Length: 383
Image (cartoon, rainbow, N blue to C red; front, top):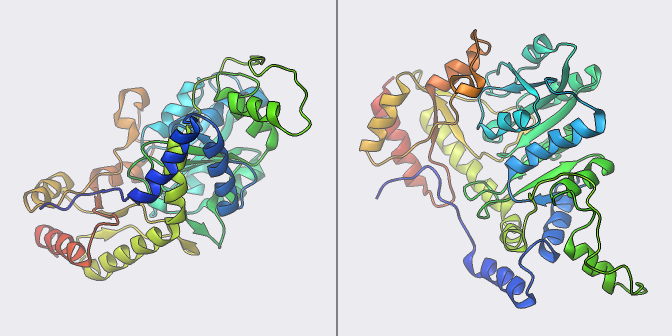
């Protein structure tokens, strides 16, 4: 049997019980479970606001849509970003007709604050920072830079559920944070996400924009109608449409799955760190296998275990022949048509893109599986 890169782990009986409650109550859309996961996530992270959505991509788009509307950003205004990420990060910038400007990464494969500083122009409005693989990198330094320069900081924390930086959720260092609960993430559902603004006004606007610009959702109107002391009017069907929004809301079934996954998030992340520690032990001293360092002061979610090797594509093929299926996170986005550059704007990101390899990392891996993967990699790469 082959060893896969990702295999999601679900507590099936608990999850089905949560979903069953949705079906028995006849409320599978936005409603009581989405409210519950928002409250649980706020308790878990200590962040002031949380809005459950159908994906982390939707969350990133909403971040820029809200900021563009509130602060009057113009088409063509700039957002400093990384080329070493999933394309959702940079698509979200373009969705709002903003311009992605690529800065380079450091040894953690996260944005380097010195490169960010060099990329700032009079049209720069924000920085989007990706905690690649659950690595906070130099997030605190980037946060300080953004505050000093009057820039908004959006944290793409798709890989960071359960991560801690100086004992706190990384979202405490950002103006807005996006989390992913997609199927292979640390807190899996089928697909969903969360957006966490620090500002209440921004949170309220995001809630409207994620529900087609409607002033209040059906569940909220139903609760208001039946609350103690509520008047007979206004009618539940009555609402205003203040904006042209999108249908980005999360639903109760995904929220039910997320509630169960959250119960086990710290336990599962601890196991991920055990697996990564074993990889570290087995791969230490092999000069041809370059391990990506974790940021100091962090307790990483360890969504990925990344190494860099020469002849990466050949190494992947050789691992596949031995029943090991690694991944690549990610290709330099400037190789894609929407992000083509006339010069090599991020050489560290390009070098990593050509050499990076994500080793299998999931809850179903045994220690023997980890030893098998490491032994195969060492044999293929040598050194």
